[in-house]
Length: 238
Image 1 (cartoon, rainbow, N blue to C red):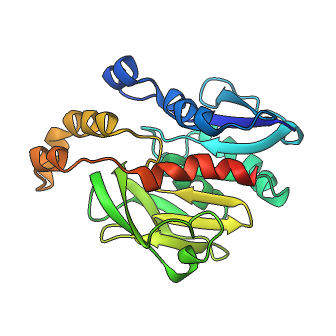
Image 2 (cartoon, helix red, strand yellow):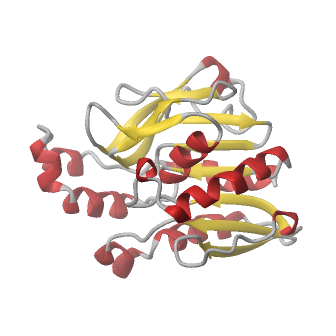
């Protein structure tokens, strides 16, 4: 088992994909910088190819973000839930991001849906809980770190068996752990500042409608190296 599977759950905006790469490319760029020689990366587009790879061939799983909504229960998305449950039961290392975070939470007994306070976009501070400070993956981060965020849905209710590792003023569930090597995060460790600004630009109207200042959000985008480090350090648990 030498394959780390990137589960692609959607496509980035066309201008983002053209200039910076699609979702899976952003993950490949980060993960390849620290990929051990015995591992290789593979991409599975779950929306376009229904047959899931056999779990006994996988050393780890990373689940991307998406413009889809978990609460819409699209057939391809619902089909991932039993597969993810089996992966958890088999103790396959997993890291879900944004849509992947919400999907894992929903698959394991939580509730994911629209955030009552609206969209969160931009570079924002994230705070570790006491459990997060003691977590094997998150414990090496500072107690507060910056992260890139863009989401309208969220984990409204974490699974009863999950541990909350991080939160912020907008979201009580910025990071969750479900098992010894299974995590998910609401923020985007794969994003660069340029990608984050491109998302804010695309969302200007929606952000203004909820009383946000897109110009200020864009001006406050900065590097988020601590959040980004989660991807490469995840590989040490594979």
